[in-house]
Length: 137
Image 1 (cartoon, helix red, strand yellow):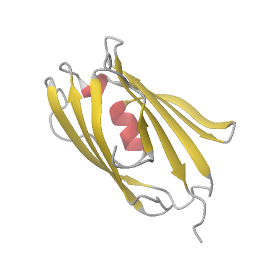
Image 2 (cartoon, helix red, strand yellow; image 1 turned 60 degrees about the vertical axis):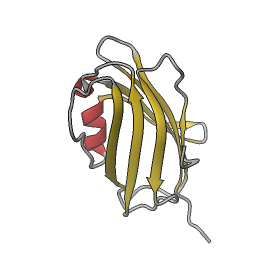
Image 3 (cartoon, one colour; image 1 turned 60 degrees about the horizontal axis):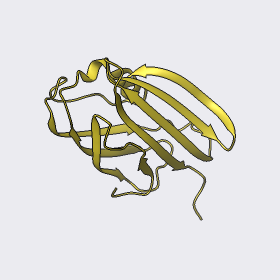
């Protein structure tokens, strides 16, 4: 991984084998955009519009959000969208997203968990994201 903000928790059984995730800037700030560039290897063709994501946000031991979305709906929640072929074949898969972090996001040290599954219930990817939005000195 090009950043320590995102950890791929998937293994060789997952459909999306993450090669690289680059997050810019490395220290996200509320009210400013955040770019994410992903490169992965897909082991089979996937209908990305049918990928189901279980998304959870925690601060300490408190769960702030626990919700299930389709991949397009999850991206839409953060101001991004899928681009390119929505049913990519097996092989290299690249995506770039620019997320809009709301200015109202509270200052804190967040942990985000994303587990996703294909329409036939295969593991797609499993990511752990660390977002430290506390003020920098």
